[in-house]
Length: 231
Image (cartoon, rainbow, N blue to C red; front, side, top):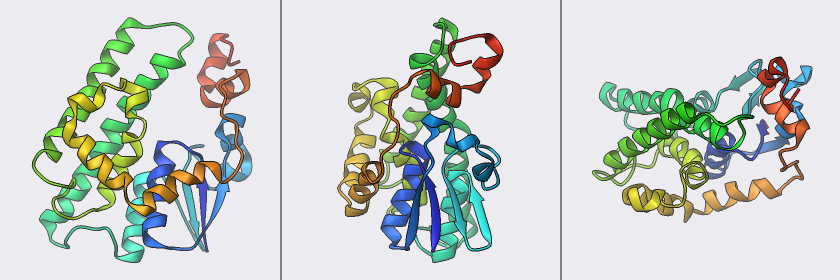
């Protein structure tokens, strides 16, 4: 059985959606990142990058959410585009766009907006611009097709969905007024039974939700070097 190392945050949500869509049996293992469990030696042996999610499939261990999506899609032969070079190139390009652009820009904006020890006008301006720029690209893409790669629902949609769930938190509720095609797409995925089950996983096990000094120290370890409260 698959072992799915999970925390209720955007990247693990992608994997939860795939697992629920595919019906693969899995064991849900909570990694309470707010308590610093991602830094324990046992978990670092699975994911040396100390992030969630991770997946163990017998002798195979996979970390990084997009790598896990690709692994599971190839394992099952599901939620992939056609097997032509052009179709696979499209998939790889958008997955990397998410991994190197949309996700880190939104993550950095959320950090500087809500968790930085001192406000930084420059950081907020840069990451707000970049987060919107990436979402505007997604909006233009979905204005021309029902799903990210065309007519077919794929792992690229699952990858975007993980971050669309937190887009209003990062950019404000007005995001859907600016991104109506993303909203149409988002509502369609949210209506899928698998998405409902994936969302429900956050209530499957108790986890720490507040952001006290212990949590800030676990999530933002760089602050230890600056004498901030997270030290």
